[in-house]
Length: 117
Image (cartoon, rainbow, N blue to C red; front, side, top):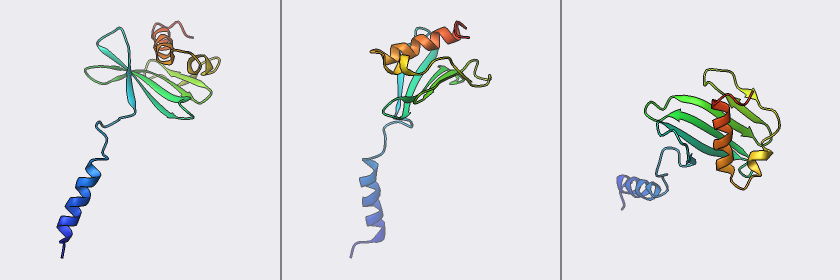
């Protein structure tokens, strides 16, 4: 008869093949000029119309700024300790662009430079 320990070990070995390679496999890096910072993107649904982009200090991982779209409305937080606010317009300009990641990076750059009210 097969032991319970053997079956458990076999089950764990099979499940290990399904484990993600990183702690957050849905996060992607976006090209960012300042190498001491990291701009990331992750989708949260709505056929990739819901997303969050975060700018962090590379060394400390401290959040500096966040842009997010809830499928229709664009929200921003900069500096990170500020309240989130709704930006004018919608996410369509970013979501419908040919270069979505570049559009996110450009919007983040304008926000951090305080060119977005």
